[in-house]
Image 1 (spheres, rainbow, N blue to C red):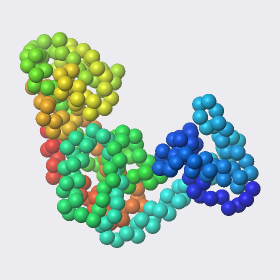
Image 2: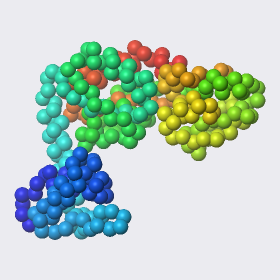
Image 3: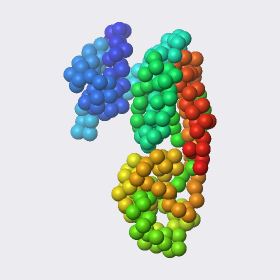
Image 4: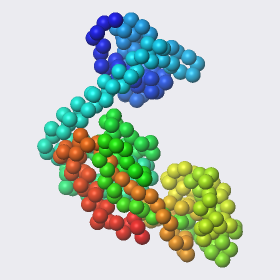
Length: 293
C-alpha cells in the first residue's frame, strides 16, 4: 500500500459511505458520478484493496473499507477543525455565513431578520440552509444554526433566544361554518395534528374535535388550515403573519418550545459570525412580544 493517500479521495469515500451510493455522494458533493467513481478507484489502487462491494441495496463496506472508515473520519474532523481555526483569523465582518434553520421559520421571521441585518452589514452574504435535519456544526455543515431543542450538544456555543407560545389557527370561513366551537367542545370540528400522539387534545378547549389530518410540517398545516381543512396548533409567531388565518377565539395560548442559536466554539471570534449572532440575539430581545403573546 502506498502512503500518499489523497484527502480528497477520502472525503469522497466518506460521502459514498454515508450516502450509500456514488450517485448520492455526487449530489452531496456537487460533482458528477464519474468524478466519484474515479476517486474511489484511485483510492482502491493506492490502498491495494477494494473499499466497497456493490449490492442490490447499495454500497457495502468491505473489510478494508471498515478498517479505513475510523481514520478517515478522524482526518475529516482534523481538517474541519483546521478550517475553523483559519476562518477565525478573519477580523472584519465580511464574507459568507451559512445559516441553518427549520423551514417553518421562513414564514416572516427569516425575512425580517435578514432585512435588518443586511442594512448594518452589507458586506456579509447569508446562505440559508432550510432544513428540519439537525445540521452538524462540528463537521462545518453550517456556521450558525437556529434550532428548537431542549438542550445543546457539547463543544457548541449556545444562546437561548426565547421560548415561544403556540396558538390555534383556522380560516375565517372555517370559523363561520363552526360558530359554536367552544359550546360544542369542537364536536363537528377537526384538528390538524403533528403526529399520532394526540393526548393533548383531551385537555384542550376542543376535546371532542377529531383528528382528520396528520401533517408533520408547519408549512403543510398552514396550507391545510387556510384551505378550510381544520384547526392547526402552530407557533403563534408563525400563524400570526399568515393573512389567510386568524386565531381561534376563546382558545388560550399553549406552551411552545425553546429556540436556540448555536455555533461552534472555534467560530466565536470570527467577526462576521459574531456580528450575525449578536444581531439575532438583539432581534429576539427587541421583538420578544411576537413570540410570547
